Amino acid sequence: MADKVVLLDFWPSMFGMRVRIALAEKGVEYEYRDEDLANKSPLLLEMNPVHKKIPVLIHNGKPVCESLIIVQYIDEVWKDKAPLLPSDPYQRAHARFWADYVDQKLYVPARKLTWSPEECEAAGKEFIGSLKMLEGELGEKPFFSGETFGFVDIALITFYSWFKVYETCGNLSVESECPKLIAWAKRCLGRESVAKSLPDQDKVSGFIAQVRQELGLK
Image (cartoon, rainbow, N blue to C red; front, side):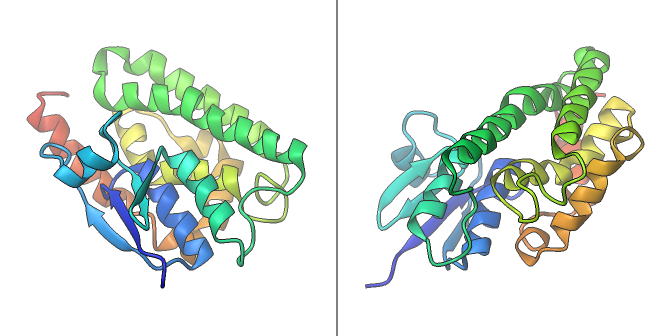
């Protein structure tokens, strides 16, 4: 019996994009269901009763929640394709540290940039500072783990779809501040798994501009 895989997601979610990339890297076929987060489906509420958030990967009826946990699950279950995490325990721990850094230190100011105009200036500085830290960790390597695309790349590249949003809201330029990171992003976009999983920056920016207008944000 073939695996039944369903992904509950929302198209502009950078967290959902991570799962889409991982599934594409592993060549896993799945059913995609785009959620209306203002009117969450009974299935989403049943599969993630704790956080009630996307993404949720449902594998043969069993849910897995939280994007980085889902990516690790995909890596462990579908082992016939190239691994997303290093085999060495220290390197695996190192990759998990930096992926967590993205969520803890980059997402927080990114969210403030998008939805809290009164915090924009400080959030912009924090956002660029976090990107510079990540750029330092990348160094001269093609990808975060070296020559191969992997876990930390998946954790970070999905923010690229939102860069235009952050630049517009924060009046900043990621490319001028972190040129090596933009070069890295373009290398990632050269992979089919990334290119087909990330929505266009203009599409995301237009959607967020509409939501901000509806919320009365300027």
